[in-house]
Image (tube, rainbow over all chains, first blue to last red):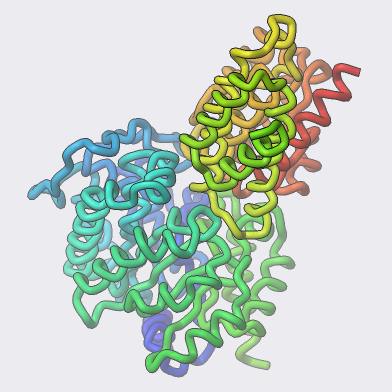
Length: 340
Length: 218
């Protein structure tokens, strides 16, 4: 079984020779930049370095899948927010949001030609050509609620989500459509799977009732809008146990979470669905990949396998300071576990 | 409505995140000639404390906390008009706050700034995406007791360590206490970089800031 076959089988809930290992979130690290010669900020902006750095996650680390991009600003920039770069060290962030609640907004017909979106689509094409036979290729889109937060500012969005959720609808609608159109374009470019990162729709930030009102319905609509055979992953940060069922009901193929969740409890809820819904995660991005060692990585992976995670991944963006040794330890631990 | 009833209603208005009601009760308190300081401390602050407790228990969430803290500010602004001049000038301490350059999310830090103002701090909120040198310059300019920085990503968290060094280089580190917070920040990180305080959430940050300011005033 090669990496791609293992990843796709795991996503479909079919048997694999060992647990599949990859990252649903960003994979750019300083060591991979050194090794591939593709660096930020260029890898945020241009298709070639974008693909080159992403490929390293498979060719150097041994992850079963590769994915682009490295930040969550592509859709928001194309819709009118401005972006600031952080050189080689960091990820682009929103500089000016672009909208205030009440401002008119509409989906631009040339959305897919705007900003860096064409480069992202091209990066997926390049990855497909370069590593697509041996690794699964993933394209990332940002969830509607999180795009709305980028367009309006999170504080205003939070206040409105409590006081006047209907005022967010025009932005959520455009955000959903933007992500869905991008997702379709990435699939057409050759992506094997789509990750919907809805990091702001976290239960650390909003309550379960607000999640059900302003985040989940739009995620569901997004998944309904993608081709029915598309493999998809929703990633939401925080302890999402209380909304497990609602996330699964969006129709997502798999769910990616932070290790703060109670994984066995989530698995129990997911097992009640009439389809396999893989649970992805288990490695602590901050305490382990930022502050830990290859040894703590191994301990995280062993615990994750014991807790019933179906696929092993960091629970959040890989800290760029994480070493190859640490990331390789994720793969090695999964390999060793399969031999036992 | 007597004083006790009003203070209880004020606390309840904060817990309900009802700004209109909170403001209305503040006006009533002034009309009744109640002691504004007492109404703030035993009424509104008590409500905010309850909101903090509910937040810790996962019974209320950030949107409610933000709205409740804004309701509290609106009420306190009104009550402060009724304070004697000497009382108005008193400060609990001077705090400089900001989110480290590269980070644009400032929900928690915004709540801390709001609450510290309510608790009588002179707060200089530098906002989000703040260059480290701006923190240093503001500490120098204001003679701050506390500088608090927030980080939500591992890439910006390292800025908190650099800030410690920059404060040392500027000869300010023994004059100001540092506090760190933000989604990815832990007590372990605070200890590792030598920060004076870490807080898990806004309520705890405010409590620690008050304690730190008290020790600094001696």
